[in-house]
Amino acid sequence: MKIGIAGSLESNDALVTIKESTTRRIEIKSIVDAFFHEQIEKTITDVLKEKALQNVTVLIQDRGALDYTIRARLLTAIARMEASDD
Amino acid sequence: MIRSLLFVPGNNPGMIQSADVFGADGVIFDLEDSVHIYEKDNARMLVKSFLRNHPIHPAKIVIRVNSVDSPFFSADLEAVVGDEIDYVLLPKARISDIKMLTEKLETIEKEKKLKKQIAIMPLIESAVSLVETEGIAEFPRVSALMFGAEDFTADMGITRTKQGKELAYPRAKIAVACHAYGVQAIDTPFTDVDDEDGLFRDASEAASLGFAGKAAIHPRQIEIINRVFSPSDDNIIWAKRIFEAKKEADQKGHGVFSLDGKMVDKPVISRAETIREKAIACKKWDDGFEK
Image 1: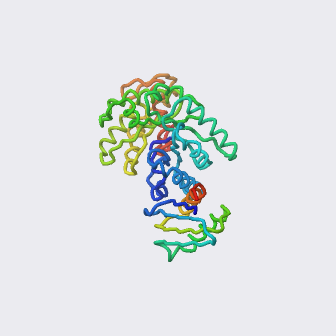
Image 2: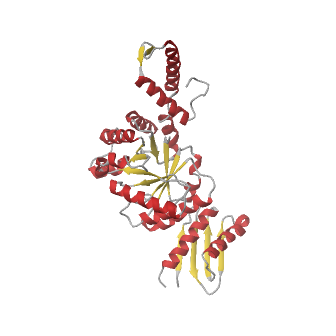
Image 3: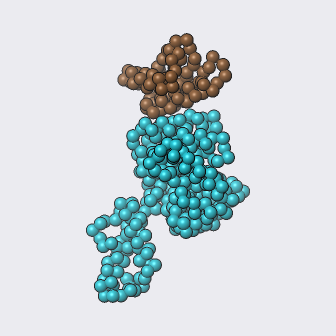
């Protein structure tokens, strides 16, 4: 199974894990989940749409990352997944 | 005019997003030494995402890419070159590297249809780079040179001291080359962030040799650097008095005149004009005074 991980658990950052799947599943663990869950989810779905990725599992462990950081970490995780061995 | 340039690690979102609040004239997003070799792709993507999606940027944006001989050089450029950036800071720069970087930038600017031309800031940080300084400074895209004392002293096999006597020659050579070709000389960072007096002395030494600014590795260094590389109030008052005296001399038809018992001729007026230009750039010149 292909998998990609990017980011960190430092403050203002996010650790993103993405792997191939038979269905789409997005799991968000955030210190600001009560306020920004929908915004984080939208950022993830926007990036997946841009990259034409449907059936993947995405886990984001957010430490207060801004939108540009979440985008960057997910894009790097996707690139690492695509470059990884099965 | 760039007085201060703050180094920011390219893979640290907390530092990237607060980089524009410390009053530096520019920020260097670093993709080279501060980024672990396994995190180059992460940093590249983070800086790119910040530049494209974050609306507030400091005055000047500089990207330190990895060196030409690294496997990351081309990917760095392709990711981060855009209208948002002002300079590419090239480590371990040689004349041949500047040629290659110029060609790469021309290609990327055409492909991305950029509205501006990206300038090059070579980093002079080895003996061979120093020997080639004049040739590097004369490239049309080069608009500033930075001195890198840590790598330079390592390359020379000498110890860098706080007194900095070992830096006198490379600093002087870089400053002269920069002035000869009309580019800015930016000094090496002072690495002891707790020693403010040492930073002041080090920056003052560089300024006395003709450097226009200095890199910073901590936000607390910026205020001192900006102060050292701005004209002092005394200098500004002196320059204004020179212009007042010149006005009087012009009315009387005198080419040479005196102020406070000292002769004032063309080189002195030229020095006053340089102070005025710097003061205007630093927003320290009052328009109400004679120009």
